[in-house]
Image 1 (cartoon, rainbow, N blue to C red):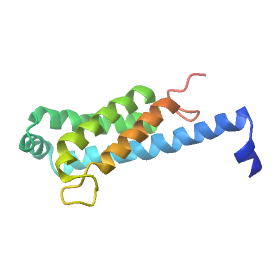
Image 2: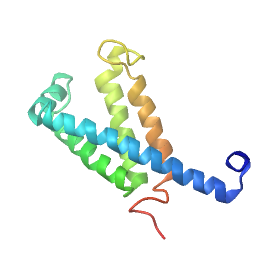
Image 3: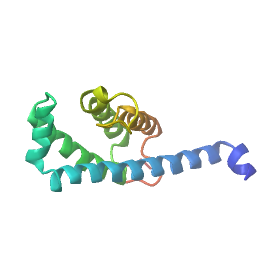
Image 4: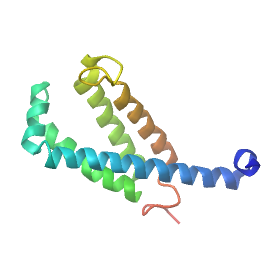
Length: 141
């Protein structure tokens, strides 16, 4: 346990690789599930309709669904993690502002507040700083 807490550079690098892996895979799965829910449950037309109902172009609904599915897969695999994470952070900040901003802070508010998407965006920024990590398809050897 002391190696974990007081370890040297090798321990820090290993821990960063583990952290990157956990964040990449877990958030990648969440994005994939969100995108597939838009595709199969809400349908593409329904997703576009929701975006239009909050004053955004319907095309943005299709693009968001595509970004969530492809971005989720890229994060799971560890491909272009830094770029994908920043794109997803921007997408999440848009969701916080346009989709949840009027519902207040707490995500338990009716309509879901902006708390959760902003926290998720911060997580994506942290992941962009960590990068692919050791266990990824995009790792440079």
